[in-house]
Length: 213
Length: 213
Image (cartoon, rainbow over all chains, first blue to last red):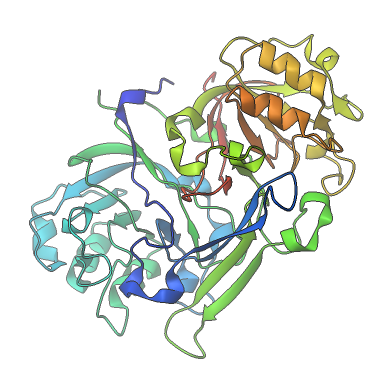
């Protein structure tokens, strides 16, 4: 087991009050509050208040399905896995089955969708998302997980069809990835969520390792 | 690069309101608050409020040193590293230089201290900690990081000598590890903190991989 430190990439968002949040909603902005400092004591300590869908995070099915599952029932080993980054930066609005049809996607893959979201300031607005036909295509190819460089894997779907199709098949959903530096190809993904009992989502410090070189 | 999934271990604490917290302080207990549910809408979402020294976490030097460094300046690659777990479960109260002297500790090691804390309900009280002479011993052996199965690496040190000795040498400090299932030996450690800008500490979902088998 050898780590190639030149081929390790952080694909996580930096958490601060001014970061992009879903639809720019104020209540999704994290707050970091000092609770002790050197004026009042001998240590500096902070408290974080954060919506669990802010920044890079893993969704669990409770997010969309009553009686759905939560973070602590996840087998963490499923988030240490080979993955394929697909370059979809030419997609203008939403990722459809057609956009995916030219890509090499196989049974058991964990797919990361790289889009214009990693380059342009669209995260709080008209970000690129996975449309229903795209989700269906991935379900039919029996993938085990999907990640995207948007704060939502869907947008403007009142029925949440994309989330639901994926979740009903137990397909993991990672949101808020940063893939600008990552070329299309195969990697090893480490995307372990903080183990928050009862939570429908949790923050992840996600990294990729290129094991081909 | 091959992952042996039978030799992967989660060494992180489960986060919930009833978990052990430093000295049992109520304000250190995490709060998970629903902000949207299926009675009021079509999604379930929560917000987490948590002291950053609760659960498994990485300290940065701002915790103890004014003008100290914070999470976002960390090179995450330093927390993907070989490490040595030392069995110190026979230590009764605190880990001293003498307790460490029989162990194999070398320049550049990342050391994880396994103690009675991983077995007994002492985390909120008289937990085993790294005493000043133990910290000095590790500094003299030029280790690059140290982790412990306590919520503080020190206890009952008004001058915070253990933290300060380690931090002044840039030695990483991981707290809140769970090492009950882990035998003494060498492992690969993944201990990446959530990337919170300006924070003196951050939650980590830490895992070990046994690469000897």
